[in-house]
Length: 229
Image 1 (cartoon, one colour):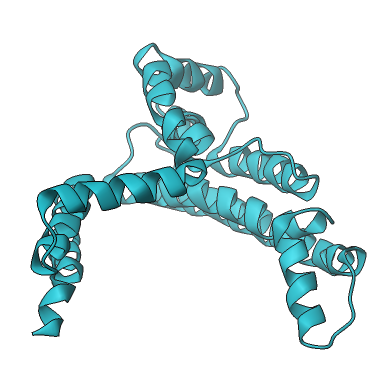
Image 2: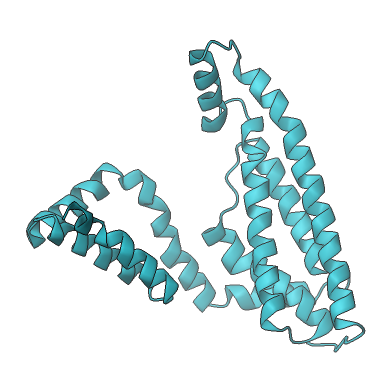
């Protein structure tokens, strides 16, 4: 009967498969797990509250979501799209290259200028979509999803592979501590130095991939240039 306590995992899996509301699925899974474990509703709420207070710094990013939502509602996306359409030579690939370069350099100096909620969803993805729409007209769902993935990937690559170039980053210090505990004497400067080539390679690969995407768009849509305004 101990397996019944894993019902929350089952609820999450089924909810995601059925594409139900993510927040609702997680909340129901948490409540169900607490109830089958013999907790009262008050105890469940108390546990959730204590967990939130203990880890509140990890949830500060949630405050950015309503701000971004207000910005989008007041025309942030529209302005981003209008700006891209005003650039004659803008393409989706070139835009992604610029962003990944900026993100890589910023991460290498531990400057937090990006984020999926703060930049990719409200700015980078709409501008990347607009660049292709302005050049080829309306896009099919598959292409829109590919652009979303390309924009999200540029954020991940730029942040993940370059962040250890900064000697004071948490990742660099974690690597130094772990290796030192295992008997490998290293310092933060060595780890940062070894991380630079990885960041450069990641950027080069991202640039090549973005350029290939532009060529794929040309082959897919041919000369369907529509002059969308």
